[in-house]
Length: 211
Image 1 (cartoon, rainbow, N blue to C red):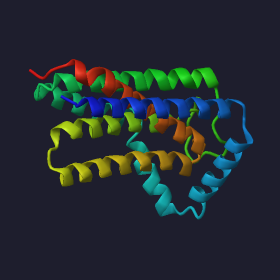
Image 2: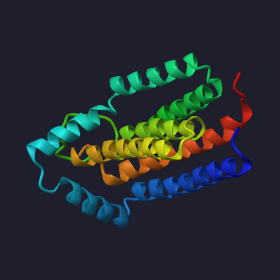
Image 3: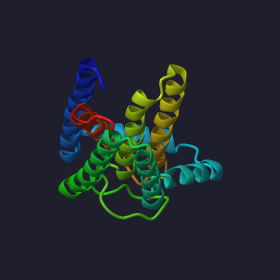
Image 4: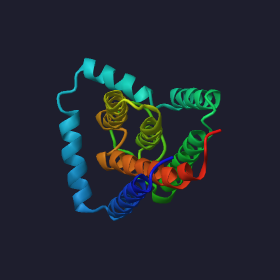
């Protein structure tokens, strides 16, 4: 079971990222000059010197967050948790993924921010927050929280968490490189995902015991 200190840590992270997300959403909605400048600077930096090799790399990376592969990863996680009878972690993962999916779509429909022009791939829908970024933050964030309990070796856990974090970041960067999202969309997706995972951990993990 997580300690009281760990629970408060998750609560603090969730509250902090949640507040920052709300502030960012307000700035995006008001079309703040800060948002415009930030998006332009980051997009220009990431999209500079595009090459066929880099484009292929980011197309592969972004495909990891597409609906079918993402659902496949979720089913693998769920199957493993059920097989190992980790029902507390299954409840946590289910809540996080459900809130991430519904929350992202609801906020998109509420804010209706248009996507950038000149996208490298064809895609519809609204832009803020990035669905790929939210989903990757939720999925990999869930894995990181579960690893806190199941991977006892600190070196192995650090390596696992580093790879999970890197994959989530690369998926977010791929959305900017392909110009299907503004940087603030990706940042918003990460903030939303971290908020959901942290608060779900705070709410669910201390209320269940493994069989």
